[in-house]
Amino acid sequence: MENTLTLTSDMQLVLGLTVLTMVLFVFERLRADVVALVVLVLLGLTGLVAPEDLFNGFSGNAVISVIATMILGAGLDRTGALNRLAAWLLRRARGVEQRLLLLTSAIAGLNSSVMQNPSVMALYLPVASRLSSRTGMPLSRLLLPIAVAIVMGGGLTMVGNSPLILLNDLLVSANANLPSGLTTLKPLPMFAPLPIGLALLAAGLAYFHFFGSKRLHENAADAGVTPGRTQSYFASAYGIDGDVYELTVTADSPLVGMSLGEAEVLHDAPLILALKTGNESRLAPPGDARIWVGSVLGVMGPRAAISDFAQNRFLRMSSRLREFADLFNPARAGISEAVIPPTSTWIGKTATTLQLGKRHSLRLLAINRDKHVLRENVREVALRAGDMLVLHSIWQDLAQAAGGRDFVTVTDFPKAEQRPHKFKIAMTIFGMTMLIALSSRIPASVALMTGVAGMLITGVLKMDEAYAAINWKTVFLMACLIPLGWAMDSSGAAAWVAAHTLDRLPEGTPVWLLEIAVGLLTAAFSLVISHVGATIVMVPIAINLALAAGSDATAFALIVALSASNNFITASNPVISMITGPAGYTTRELWRVGGPLLLIYTAIVVAMVNLMF
Image (cartoon, rainbow, N blue to C red; front, side, top):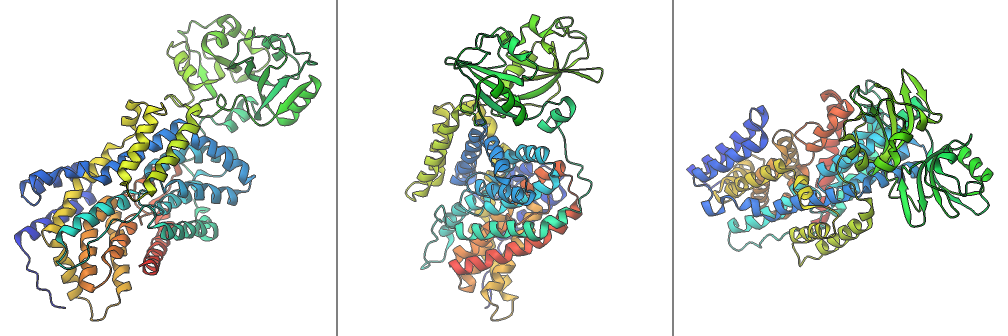
């Protein structure tokens, strides 16, 4: 095939801007979003994109969809959905490490099909940390398999990651520059890439189950494991161990008529963390609260000890939390440490005198004084400067009490308001949103924004929280680079590159070999200029390459959009950048584990696209 396209000045300008963008991304002298803004301004100044079109990227379906998925993810996070998931994973794994790793990775991969990959990774970091602390499994063994599953699972739907969200906009814009007589390119429906995504996710899970996990064993340092103030920490440091149970008081129980303080000093009494009397449920109840027939106690301790206490005191024991499920949700409440400073007004006073339960809704569990742990009758111990208090409370109550500066919290806890009582509402809205998105009559951006509106109206999220959930750097990067893709197409630069590429290939080069080359080139670009940049640069080239080779343009474009996420090695993939610090991965380790995955990913994408198209 002979190339008849002439390299015009506009083509030279666009190609020059593309090279400049790559160089600036590689050397990182400027932030990625600043580079994108510079490119946008240059496109306007050179006239490559009309002034009235220059900022259309900010209102494009792709950018709106990305914003909406970020807000929806924040809504699910506020309801504690991921904490519930962590507890479920622990129960299902039953202590088997391989099963835990497989389950966690698979669920994370499925979650990423309807949420932005970085948002899913942000939600799973605390889940992984909690699983690590509860099982003793190194964080480095968990995070990379989860991250890979999230990236792979992003290929299940057209809203799973930014490149796929961008793809439909790029396909529509390419129609304006197609030669006459060719069929117009149509946007792909929501679940168009589902078979490819399933194959990728299955391959990622199998890779770590049979091969990759052994390579992660070699990471002996595990520098990234941060013990934090976890359940295992409180068990070893203070002897505060066990799970939470509900005890219902029967008419025969000797506890009837007792105050909570009297019940707590019984020799075999567990930690009493909550009390429900009538219709009132309360965490950290005051010591003078009375126990009556039908009252429910929320207690913590070893199962055998609580079972004995329940039998001896005629209490009905339940390991399933029916009354206190929301109160004991880790997203809403938990155990913390706090230090008494020398300036505290609490010095010399006891928890009973301070009425910690009644005034502050704080339950004092133990005191660490000069490396000695006090557990017996701690309500009556006069506090001293330097005492380390172990408290159980709702996080919001702890944050409010800490504002008085009578103690300083040591534990990192969720400062933002959690709304586990909105869990069912949030999940219903999310499910309905996905159903609306399934109908091809309504654009995905409109469907996703419908879900956002639902979460705001029902109080799952507040408007300011929705604004805070948006990663404006990602939005700005995408919106500013989209016009570069338009310029590549409209100037003819993409067609020129495609024609020259074919000219230099031997006659009769198989189409599948071209597809592999496109996939690997896109992956190489994504290593240095981000997945968004790689998609915007490569989709117009891939479409023109397919047209010149007489192949399916949509298939080539889909290979690019999927291959743009084929980066398990460098920090230009935001998911990988989020785990390298916490897990302590080195560049060598990432190449050793992620290198083979890159090739496996490309082979699966090309094979599946050829089967589908």
